[in-house]
Amino acid sequence: MVFCTFCISVSLSIYRSCAYFCVFGQLGFLVPWFFHLLLAVPCRMCYNSSKPSGMLTCQLQSKEHIMPSPTNKAQDNSIRENVYRVIRENITSLQLAPGTTVSTQELAAKLQVSRTPVHDTFSRLEREKMLRPVPRGAVVPPLNTDMIRQTVWMHRTVSQAVLGELYNHRPTTLEPLEHCVAAELEALQGGAIIKMARLHLEFHRTLYSMAGREPVMDVLERNSGDLYRLLRMMESADLWRYVAEQHSTVVQGLAMRDYEMAAHALEAEFDLVKPLLEECRYQRPYFFE
Image (cartoon, rainbow, N blue to C red):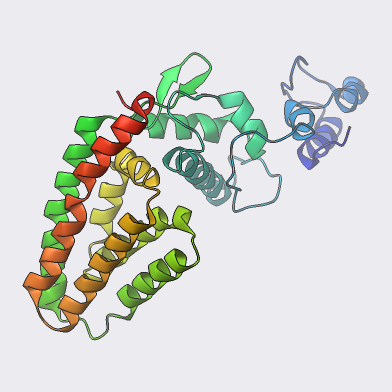
């Protein structure tokens, strides 16, 4: 068994301070004269790290095996955000499919963090309707059809307003949007359909950013979990090519100072969601409420 750096550092701390209380697996309180017992029985993270990894496919940005400390708030917040990003991405990418039960303890072991940031992430995702609480963990809920329709309405309405603001601002360059469209076309040409949902989101995030409306996009993203999961189900290269073409037309409309062209292309993109929703409900009814 290979011990994690956390086990070793805690053990040394116990030995030095003679007054440390910790719980690892089935161990109770530890005192210096039981120091050798801690090294004899590894923590759950050491034990689980020797097992094959589960469904989570994303990695924490910080590769160090460090537990957050109350005295290091910046590190604590960084770990919490990384855990949130990883778990949310695995839900929206359908790596954690609807109906999947996730355990706080198991995810903490896989991500090599304490249970606290995982528990906090579960609470955060429950507020975003992306998890439902169950004993000792949470379950990934099915997609809510009505919520998707409401979310599309929000995106459609707000995006048109943001497009109007960007049009009136007369940006000196449209290169950021052009780069997004180029990335979409490159992914399509290379057959990387799996990247398209993320690139689609990046285009809209860039559009909002250029209009100075990033906080608005942040709010929309936090309430668009079901919509993003639906887009991950879209596996047709032709449909994604149609979306990329609409994005290209939006950029052309802005460049030519033709608001109607840009606005119509944006509307056409959102109009695609309704038939996509019906098709996915027919093909994967077990993914929906």
